[in-house]
Length: 331
View 1: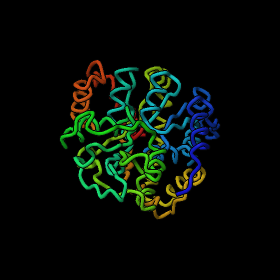
View 2: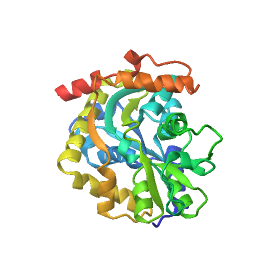
View 3: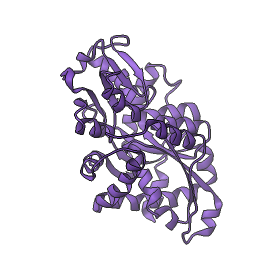
């Protein structure tokens, strides 16, 4: 693995403070394009790469949409940007969305993907750790406050008999964990693709478990309530672009892989197309909004309420808005 963590940090810090790249829409809907400019937040792990592809595909421009992009290390940071009203749209898993709904009234306008297979708990290869309970007394890198971090601390570790204090949680961005594992400053990590694939390919870490059987982890596209109120037609056009992007991931994944791979190589990562294909294959990209998602969200909200991470259960009739996607599907 080859990377420049200083350069990555600077780039992401600039993006997080609003120095995102402005892209002008050149499509056939100038009236719509002039109405608003999307401030698109996304995370730089594999969960955010479908959004990255959407922005680089030209599909937004075809809908006459202008946008700015704001890259951060993980979705919970995008959620925090939205709560602070620094970006309009962003993707993250259900747990972060629930917190964002509680703290900032955020609204889900689409379910973009399921990513449970992309999340792994991994340990340094030489430690020969095969079970979660073997992490007792170990240093575990975790993106504290993220959806995957919350699931690990609130559900996976307790189920294995580990309570807070039984392991040392090392707070760390997911994009720094592989380097920390290689340097042996942590013993294990809770991480996502493509970083898990990199750690495995480089012989740094082995897998203890992935999240799929615990949580399939639906990832939502969320909007601020102000954006929903001011730009409902723009949201429908935006979701039409997402439906087209979703078709590419199903029918021509190689096209998406090529675009996404350029992102990581530009950041100093050495990764083959085959390795990226394996990482992306773990992401089930299927933009829509299933009507049966509420029971899952209620269950996750109850866990977060029990852990005092939210003040109350969201009003799902306000927080979940499948109607925008339904309009996009109808055309």
